[in-house]
Length: 295
Image (cartoon, rainbow, N blue to C red; front, side):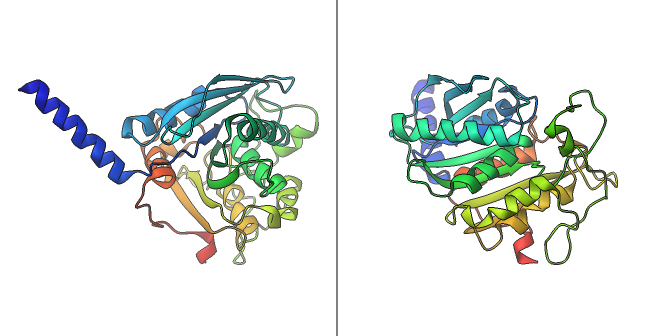
């Protein structure tokens, strides 16, 4: 009796999940940030798996040489498969990340016949995901971009917190040049201060895949810094001025309070996990937060 009830309950749960989430073979690729590893992606992916929306299927390790090592696979019959990317040289910077991401996506297209992709990136991984799409557009040798969820992206500066993990020499050192409330978004949507890394994105704005749907998540600690402690809200929200009029959908989501700290945004953050899962896979996802494009 109990065993039969469990089967019925399981079948009912499966039917509910099918009704709630898209049934798609489109993989979602997760890209970590500066100095990070697969652990940075784990909590967000686990939340998606627990909800029944998606499941991890592949890990692609990018060696410092650029060589790719693949564990697992993706197949057309898989429902909402997740691909985790690990950069062995996790301090190579966002431009190199984007180049390696191009190599990863070419492999997915050529060997695994992936024709469409979703992207999730945190911090420098978020910048890399945006830069990748601006560099490549809708090239036929690469999967078409479907949805893009970026979290805590430093598009126009990173706060100089004098931390030990900041580079102390080379061109990457120049990225850590922002401070709380130093920059702001003007009424036009344009940031008042334009850093070189932002100018690089803006010059390529017309290349971004027009069919893409973009969710830009950022953190506000609520302590007066208007930042997540590493990336200012102005830097994160400057993405809107790059993408407006160039994508089919653009939305922002603000995580607020102590859990909105830069790294905490991907560490079992319930608000972030919920909206990320809904945006990527929920059939009934609706625009429910303010967007710069509407201002």
